[in-house]
Length: 143
Image 1 (cartoon, one colour):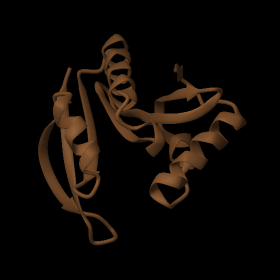
Image 2: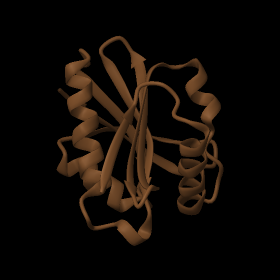
Image 3: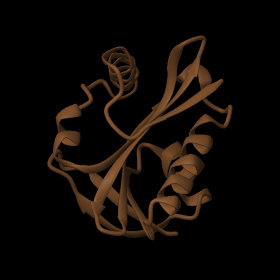
Image 4: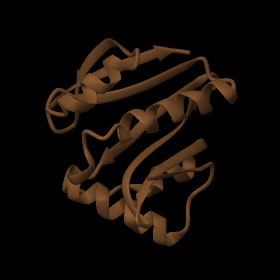
C-alpha cells in the first residue's frame, strides 16, 4: 500500500481515479470546483497496484481551522486501516502547518465515518438539516 499527499491538485489521472472511487461510494460526482476557491488544499490517496483505493480531501476553512471535507475507501479495502492512516496523516500535516482545530461533517447513515471520527478524538458539536432535508452532524477536534 502506498500513501501519497498532494498540497495542490494532483494529475488528471489521479483526479479521475479519485472521482471514479467517489462516484462508486456516493453515487454522485465529486465537485472538484469547490477546491478552486479554497486555501491550502490537502489531497491524500492510498494506492494499491497503482490504483486509488482510498482518498481524503480537506482545506483551510479559516486561519487555524482545517476542514476535512470528503473521503472514502473502496469497499474491497475497508477494514485494513486505510481511513485511519489517511486521518492520522491529515492531522499530523495540520499540526505541522499551524492548524489548531479540524472540523468535519457527516451523516448518521455514514456510521463507519462517524465512528472513525469519534475514535480519532472528534466531538459532536452540533447538527443541522442539509438542503436535501437530511440531518448532518458537525464534529470538531482540537489539535
